[in-house]
Amino acid sequence: MEQTIVFNKELISRYNLFGPRYTSYPTATQFDENFGIKEYHEVVTDSNEILLPKPLSLYFHLPFCNTVCFYCACNKVITANRNRAAPYLKDLHKEISLQGPLFDRDRVVKQLHWGGGTPTFISHDQMSDLMRHIRDNFALLDDDTGEYSIEIDPREIKPETVSLLRNLGFNRMSIGIQDFDISVQKAVNREQSYEQTRQVFDEARKRNFHSINVDLIYGLPKQTVRTFCNTINKIIEMSPDRIAIYNYAHMPRLFKTQRQINEEDLPEPGEKLEILGESIKSLTDAGYIYIGMDHFAKPDDELAVAQRKGNLYRNFQGYSTNADCDVIGFGVTAISKISNSYSQNIRTIDDYKERLEGNNIPVYRGYKLNHDDELRRKVITQLICHFQLDFDEIEDLFRIEFKDYFSSEIKLLADMEKDELLKIEENRIIVLPAGRFLIRNICSTFDKYYDKKSNKNTYSKMI
Image (cartoon, rainbow, N blue to C red; front, top):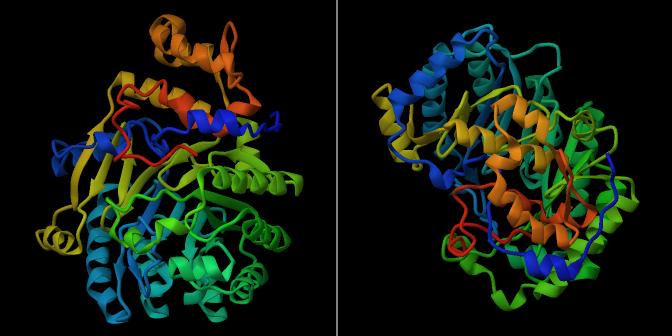
């Protein structure tokens, strides 16, 4: 696939609206409480009965953190008391016991992920007990071919923890960094040295983790082009397999912890774009492939290979090579994608406990896709993963005439074509190099539920 990228600041500034990240379509804003436990059981039953049932992807939300990072917008519990995790883990075990029997045992778990919060907040014994209970209820792979990953805060981990995680079956690691500059770290209440981060990184390499991802954030307080370039250079020297550079979305009305950030310390929009532009240049010059959105990978990484082969996918954990999986989310706020439905667990730990004490799956809202939703999801997924869309493929799958069905959307794309973000050919759309950073804008054209005039309080800026 053509990897040329054009970073046009004028175009990016003009198109930098508020909009979805498209980790799902429809997005979670369309979920409602008409989809509950009954509907969840129905879609699970249907997913077991298809001719070739899909393998599974399991996500576990562990919301505990020892300290708060001011930029964080995750569902989390801030506490220095490690004992607070025990009751939650007991409930999580209960949910696993309720969910396991619903799925046929021959549906192997190709993908597993522990996220947070900080998954390594819990003790070694608790980690071992949790993974053992997962294995008792689901068909985990024992040959190290699954994509089993965990999010890591280097401040919360010791060398022996890395060894334990590898022995438990984890073979991928995502390391939270955000920025190595000490003034930025102090401004967001996350002081984390290069040395302690490198120690975890090197230990993971020593233990033969298949893939290491690092997470960075641009647009944080006190950041400058110079300081963030220094961070990028250190990351390149570490040579992770994947790199995610997320846009900091300052939304203090929605996320209370962000109110502790001094807005005067945030970089101006122009400098923020320059930070992103210089970061992209440094990474692509170093040989990383721009996968899309915020993600980069080495050319031989599975994400880059999947993109070249045309089977890359996007879900609630970001880009994925496992498009064929049904996703089951465990824990508070976790989201599942089963067959043609989405469902989300209850939001608070107390409500989560109450549901499980009644032996109920803790789903409280969701959404079942209709034919139009599935069609649009396919279109958006193809664009956001592969930067092109083949009309014939969509027509064969959904029995439509593409240009008739999407006549109004194609008209809307005309202005983007004039700006050389994309090219509309007879039988396909090709996203051009200048449009790759604006792929969310292009995808939003096909989003039936998106209204760019009323999304300021719902979504972050697209860049």
